Length: 94
Image (cartoon, rainbow, N blue to C red; front, side):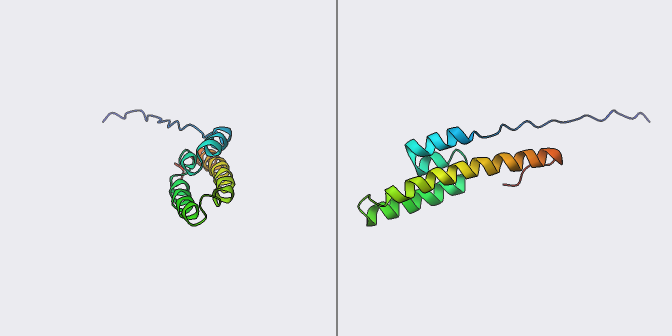
């Protein structure tokens, strides 16, 4: 019986840029968070709409900076999980 050589499989996943995340959330608010976090984008989109309705748009002065911060932290955390999983040859949890 012949033995076949084992093949190595390499999965390449790109990192997410914190700078691009900040830029997208600065210009597009909660829609920009979708670049770095789907859940974060959905939560902040719904929250921003509710806040904007009840405060006639003035509440966006509070939610917009939160979006920028959340987007930057989400991209940073994604990259850290990706690099940590590369050390153990596993896929990052989503």
